[in-house]
Structure formats: structure tokens, C-alpha cells
Image: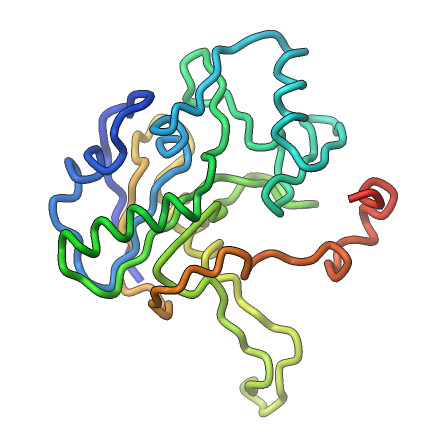
Length: 235
């Protein structure tokens, strides 16, 4: 697998996202995946709010979340079926503004994919919209897929055999988040100005059907639920 990052100029609020992508990707090849940081998707949608007081920011975080609880460094929230800090409300690379998450990353990924499929007459092509997240008991942030289109987001090993012939019972690989993490590592989190990337030769199954909920885990079945039992009992 090969990841090519793309350095660009600074994306402006409410700018046309597809035109911006086309300026840096005049041709898209078969069996590739386009990775787009959620920041420029949100900016293209006008999801930008002028920076205000800490109190107003907290109100915004709570409004954007499905569940929230305060922690030492940020609000621990659940939004769109994912645990994240501050409901994705972010001030980094925002020039004294606050950027919210895109409205519907799966729908946007599909629209972008459909456009380039038609323009370049290709069949196997994927799109991922990425963000960053932290994980319990681990330092640092990694990439996560907010939305994707064009490939299966999971690889199911259940009922197949390991190298010693023992059947897997629960192993399912999260393909979408794994690709997002690899791409985000290369794209960077600071002043790299690399909001786009192309993944070549990814070990994925390309398909047309969008499975928006395939990565979501029902809270009742989540193995980490006991850790948050007291806080999440009303969710």
C-alpha cells in the first residue's frame, strides 16, 4: 500500500470543495482512495463560528453532542455514534474561529465519489473523510474515518481459520479507520498543509453500496461499557 500526500494552499471558508480537489488532482486512477481531512469539508459547508467565550464554547459542545461529561482536559462526548473530545468542536487551524464537524460525512463522501467516477470513467474508487481522535489509556491522537464511500469498511475474519487452524470467533478488522489512521499520520496535524491524500493498492473490497452504520457498535454490546457504566447508563 502506498500513500501520497498532497500539499495545497489554505482552503477558504465556503469554497467549492470539488473544484479545490480538481486543482490538485487533475486525474484520478482506478483502484485508489481519496482521503480528505474533515476540516476542509466543514469549511466548504460553512461550519465555521467566530471564536467566543469559554462559556459559549461549552454550550456549543453540548449542543453538538448526543452525550457529554466533563473530564480533566476536555468534554468526553458521543456524537454520530463515536466517542470524541468536545463533539469535534475545534479551534486548531481555524484562525480565531471554531470549526464544527461536517454535517453528513457519508453523504459528502458519496457525492465526491460519484462526481469523480463519472468524470474519469472509473469503477473502483473510494473516498474517506478523516478526523482525529484519542483512545482510552493511550497517549496521542490517531486518525478516524467520519465517513467513506466506495469500499467495505470492515473485514470479517469470523469463522475463518488462524495459522494453526483455529477458527476466529470475534475478529473483525476496521478497515476504514485503519486507512484513515495511516493517511492522517502522513498528512500531519500541524502546519503541513496536506489536507488531501491518495491511497494506492489498499487491501480493500471496492463496492458501490454505502453501509453508513456498519462500523457502529450498539452500546449494550460494547465491551468497554462496564468502564463507563455510571456515566453512560442514560445513553
